[in-house]
Length: 369
Image (cartoon, rainbow, N blue to C red; front, side):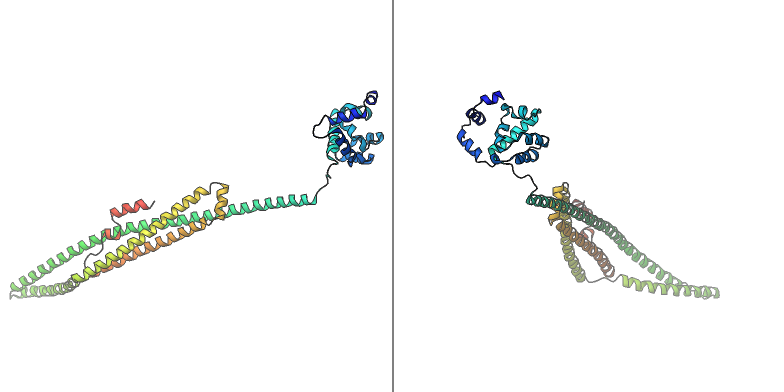
């Protein structure tokens, strides 16, 4: 108390001012006297101690000592011993906390109301709602992208099956063409053998006619031979008619026109098949690009908002449709031209014309996986 009495007001103000160059002691004093905190009552100081400083255990001490707003600067100066000697606050952390809070309200005025703000609560709730909706949309978009990828992979499997079916059909057509060539050779051999047998039968009939005798035994044998000969003749006439029908040959002009028609049709078919194979290759490349993009969450979200998956799916469906059309047309052409060759009696098709020979098969292997 003696030390406190020995310090004059001017010295106390100078010590609180701390030789600040930005504000004078008089300006600091006038600002403090005009402050709302300077007018606080003991009740308001206790409320500040409880709600702002959060040290309600000293409320009774402040009430007994009658601390009001004019005493706040003394709380901010630790050297004067008010907190420790007069108020009996022994904890240095509590003294430091009270001093800092007192310094704060002296310099900057009373603290802001710490009560809940409705606007703040609305902003926080809206932010949480936006974040929740965003996460929900992200999950839905990722699920949608996954479903689209599964559908696209399924379409790719169907496209691969159609591609394998085309290769198998081409292999079967190659075997059928080989069998067709063998059948043509066998037909020529059969015609040659029938002509030879017909000539032999005629010679035998002439020989029997020349060696006929008048004996009864010979007449009986001759009668049997004539009956057999009549049967042979009927069979020969039937064979001659079949040979006549089978040995019919179409005019050379017809063969030329049919060959020209087949060549033009084959050229058009090759163009259509090339377009189908190109569509299939583009669909496969687009599918591979989509698979690379889906490796991350951001990539999945980009795919979900993008139309690329739907576009790739349409490409796959278009390639599959074109490939099926080419396969059906190839099978129909093989059957139709085989029938034309059989009726006309000459060869029009060839393995290279149908694109199923060795060379073309190698070229196809470069396109197909």
